[in-house]
Length: 125
Image 1 (tube, one colour):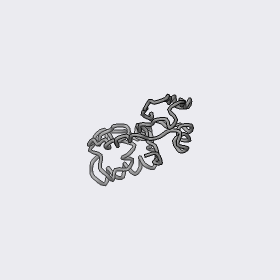
Image 2: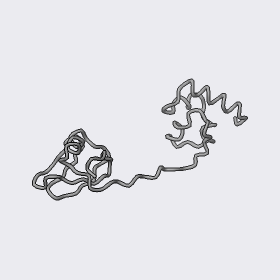
Image 3: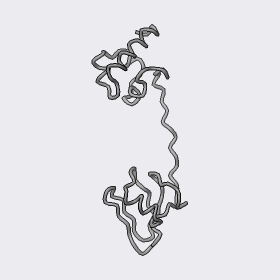
Image 4: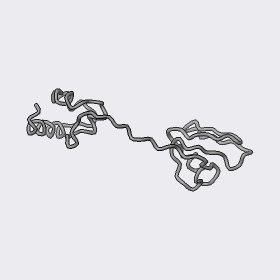
């Protein structure tokens, strides 16, 4: 498994069981015969140790199923991803004022205008 690209949550061990390894950028530490799971972020030093063979991947992290939740947001809604990231439902989006719309991270003036046109055209205002 050692020549594969490491992912967060993969289990690794040292190739040389007589030493230890520490990546101060992420706080990842492993010693001797331990097996450790990689954290959410993999530092440059850890990547270098993996690519050089000093750290070996011995177990793969299970792939997470994408979180699905029905927000009721139409697939073609302008700014849909930004509204989903904020956890807003379609009914909540329809009630936002123009000032509140542009306050949502990822929504600018153009998207707010496109949304107004979308809602007017759909007769959903």
